[in-house]
Amino acid sequence: MIVSEKKLENARIELEIEVPESQVEEEYRKVFNRIQRSAKVDGFRKGKVPLDIIKKKFKGNADSEVVENVLKASYIDALNEKDLNPVSQPDFDFDTIEASKSFKYKVAFDVSPTVELGQYRNLAAKEIAYKITDDDVDKEIESLRERYATVAKKEKGEKAEKGNYVRAETRRIDNVDDNEKDNIKPQSISVVIGKNKTDYSFDDDIIGMAVDDVKEVIKKYPKDYEVKDLANQKAKYQIRIIEISNLTLPPLDDEFAKDLGDYSSIEDVRKKFRENFENFAKEKSLKKTKEELIDEIVKNSTFDLPESMILREMENITYKFQQSMGIPEDKINELFDKGMLNREEFTGKIREDAIRNIKSTLVLLEIAKAENIKPSEEKYKELVNTYAEKNNKTAEEIEKVFEESGTKQNIETDLVINGASDFVYDNATLKKQKPVSLEELAKL
Image (cartoon, rainbow, N blue to C red):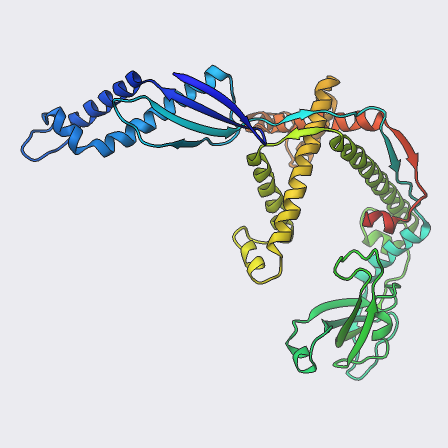
């Protein structure tokens, strides 16, 4: 058997294989003999049909079976000869097969990606600083008071006032004829008037309105607004009031603190909330800094990524998106068809995220290999104990489940990746930025 190898782009290999005539003939002989033993032809007993009749009558069947057998055997032999490990299904390309000729074909498949690692030590990065204030804690407690508030609908005709809870419908009516406004699907909003202090909120517009009142307003959005289609734009809305309610907030005392959970006093609540915010901000800042460092390594590295790997990661990201949005697996095409999602933009963004995820993982695994970073047994035990506690099992039971399901290997890989990320961070030069608020940090 003659095998020649050709490297294509995107970690793809093409083999050109020639199976000798003798091997093809031997396979035909085996196939025709097998067919002869079971063939039923009028005028002949089973197993007694002459071979020349079998070859004439069952040639098509034999061709298909011989091709399948020859491809399977020679492909495996070629992989062993070239010491190749495909990561995708093979794509075969051939013409016809004949018993009196050698059989030539091409087969292409993806192999594991290659990485040329760029600089990963002594990188420079900006580290986000943050400041947690009493106001942050007060806002959170106030939100909880609203959640525990007593709600009483106001009488029809009564006006909305600061502190009222209001449900309303809004329609964006830019460039819409007056007779078409009612055909636009409304968006439901719920506000506690006065809570939102941004210039583009509807709070001030709603004050003084009653149930069923309708008003048109124009909003100007800032350049950095999180909804890109609205950033630095003006938009015209129609507002209709659905319901107005008075909110009676619970007293801010120790009894309210106890209603919130395992707290003894309001001061205890404040202390715990501040601690939670500090932990959140620390983790968020650390994550953003690590992402910046890894992006820099990725930028300075070169990759040869197989398309099959990118497509698999795109499927994973899409599945997670559907899970997070509560979209059934077979319904996402309906969102495209109804114009609720732009197929091209969505697919492009998913592909971009998939490539970034793969490259980030690959460089971290390469760093772990270069620095001999191993999974932390201590952190693995911590994870096992956490799962055991959550599922009311013993650590031994959880470890057994992890080992039998293959989960242990995945966890250890994650621990290695995290270890490499920590290594990059610990060996970087970090520059603290001007502190940002908790609200700004949460938006990053």
